[in-house]
Structure formats: structure tokens, C-alpha cells
Length: 108
Image 1 (cartoon, rainbow, N blue to C red):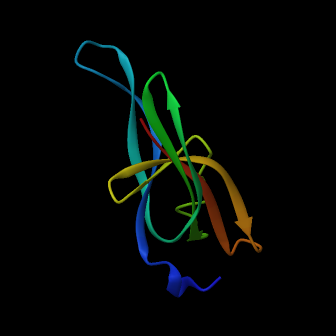
Image 2 (cartoon, rainbow, N blue to C red):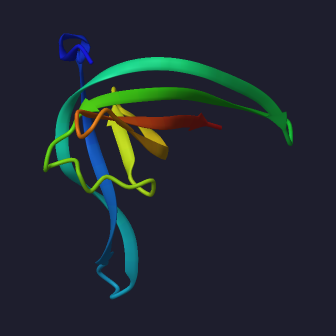
């Protein structure tokens, strides 16, 4: 992988449970790594459901492998350019060289 093409700054976030002011457990997102990534758009879709248009954009973020990103999971999300991308699955590139995060951005 040519890491010179990793020109997008992304944040990796994991869901954590916190307690709100009423003592209830609520899910919140916490950033555990901010890294450079190479962005590739791989497709998209647009649907009409219940008189509302919803769209999805499929992307791949390729990041350099390191100890700060070794724990990334499919339940995490990627934040890029103010949008939250759901991680669908992770592909390893080479032997510990890089990770490709296959993601989806949904809008309603």
C-alpha cells in the first residue's frame, strides 16, 4: 500500500455505556484513535420507503496497522467529515501492513 495516498483524517470510535443524570445506562461514543486513511467510494443506493428517500454510500477506509487500531471491531464506527460511517467488516492487507474498513453511510 502506498501510504502517501492516506490523505483523510478519520476518528475511530467505540460504543461505551455511561450513566446519565437520572442513573440510567445510555450508549455513547468515545474516540480511541485518530489516524490517516485512504478513502475509496465503492457504491451506493437510494430507496423510497414510507414516502421517505433513504440513501446509503459504501466506502472503504484503508489505514496503516498499528497497536492503536489493532482492536477495531465491526461494532465500531468511523467519523469522517462530520459523518458517522458504520463499520460492516474489516479486511487485513498483507501481514499486519494495513487494515481496510468496509463501511456504510446511511441517511434518512
